Length: 62
Image 1 (cartoon, one colour):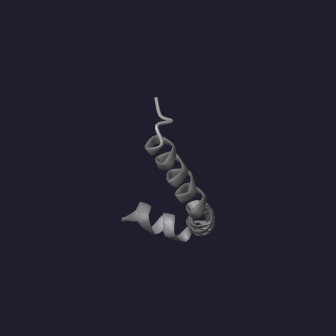
Image 2 (spheres, helix red, strand yellow):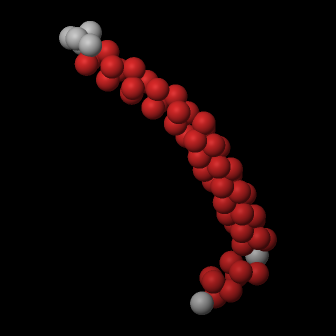
Image 3 (cartoon, helix red, strand yellow):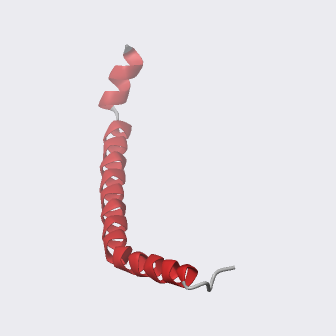
């Protein structure tokens, strides 16, 4: 119990909370960037799939 009380009263607890908040903000921004890129390239991958399917249907496959 003394160790918990000491940790909560020490400066390290505040530093740990600050690092947790920074980590959360970094993760939110990474997830947002990945979502944005994924939404932006969705049409491109659909086009690649359509062209590949058409090439295989026309007999251009291996």
